[in-house]
Structure formats: structure tokens, C-alpha cells
Image (tube, rainbow, N blue to C red):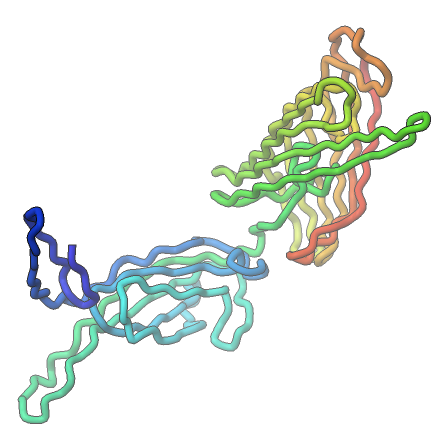
Length: 348
């Protein structure tokens, strides 16, 4: 295939003869200008996010030289909030980015915004001798797309240490929107004196966090604990989380419901992710970049938590409650804060 911008693609079958020079002469036909539909990297986003998470990339193709004007209009009121020019076009693929701001750089409120691209083909140079019909105007090509600004969309790093996204031990109620994902890995180590030597434990995990449709988030975790004298214990968990309610913006109160299935090959509970089926209600009080997290949980397990030799432990239903909490600081690039957990046996 032979391609050149502004011309129609040309393809043919050429017979190649061994030990002979094969030449091909091609005369390309000029292509008529055309504009493809707009493609959005994000149909909805939160302008407060950093980098590519806080903007949409709008892409389209053209077939010949030309230029375009972009208009962004608030759909509810019909008010034009931003406009700019693109071109001249010198290749097929074109794109621009919009971060949810008006012509003055101010962040726009939540709502739907119509993005319109109006394109024109490049006009040939005027011939001062030729006569033209001034009533004939160049054809305008128009494509539109709808983008939603939504400050409730939260796309930020959350730890998957205890099998559910949050701040280390404490789950948080926000979920990833469809179809975003987070892939992360965590490792920690504990060292303590042991007679005349030292012993250590070093859990490591690999976590996957997926935003699903219907306001659901799936978190999958797998890892191992190094430092045991014999076998290396493995652990894994999977959890689903769905938001329940949100009240206010700043301050804001958020809540979610979560369910988690966990398995580990040890009877200790240093990760607050013990073998069993658990359900919880992650809560969050948001104060700008600071948040207070609290998550009451209940778990049913065939084993009891033990920090001594439990090889002889027989399976039996145990039920207890967790109280997990923390103080979260989230500036976008930096996420940190203290966290803790309490456990109380309620039925054996």
C-alpha cells in the first residue's frame, strides 16, 4: 500500500521476478476532506485529579489538509465556556486534551459539556484571473461528543494490604470507576531478637484493583510470607465493594458495603486478613485532603487466631469483629497516614 496525507490510499499486486529490478510508478489521487467521529479517552472525569486522570483526550482523523475550531458548551445552559483553533493539519491523526476548565483556566462545575469540532478543508490559493462564485461557501464538517465533569469520581492510590482497598489495614469507601484499574505491590518486614539470634517475617503481596460496572470494585490479592523455617506460607483474598451513600462535598461523609473471602496458611493475623468470609461497612469523614476512616467488620472463620503452635487446631466456626480505623492524608501524589485495628471474639 502507498499512502500520502491528502491523497487516496493506493494498493496493487506487484509480481517480483528473481534477479530482476521491478519498478512501480504510482500517481495518487487527491482525497476529499473528511472528518471522523470523535473518540474520548474518558467520557467522565474529575478535574481535581492530577495528570492524565484529570483530563480527557479527544481524538479524530482527517483525510486532507485543513483546520478546525473547537467549541465547548455547557449542555444545561447552552453557554460557551471554551473555544480554540486546531491546525493546519499535516497528518491523519489529530487530538487535543481538555482538563475541565474554561477559557480563563478556572475549573468548571460538575455537569455535562458538549464538545464540538468544526473542520474545514484547506482552500486552494486564489487565482486573481479566474472567476469564482462567491455564494458557494466551503463545506463545514462537524462532529460532537459529550463529556461529564464529576467531582465524585475518585481515582487515587489505595493500599490493598488487608485485601480491600484503603489505608493499609483500614478499608475506605471510595471505589474505582469503570474501567480503571490499579496494580500494586507491597512488602514489609518484622525483626525481633530470638535467643542469641534474630528472627524475621516479611510478607509480600501483589494486588489488583478493578473498577467494575454497576458501581462495584473488585480487589484481588496474593502473596507469601518469607522468614519461616520450613515452608513459605501463602495467602490470597478477593473482595467486592459498593458505595452506599455520600453526603456533602467538603466536609463529606461516605459509606460503602464490602464482602471479602480470604485464605492464608498461617494462624497469625498480622495483616488483619485472616482466613474466612467477612463483611464490613467502610466509613469516611472527608475534610479536604484529610480523611478519618472507620470500618466495623464481622468475620466467620473455621480457625481461631493463634500466635503459638496451632498445628493441632481442629476446624470449628469462629466469629469475631474487627474495628479498623485510620487518618488519611491524600494530596494526589502523596498518600499517607496512621492506621490501626482491634479484634473482639463474639462467638466460639
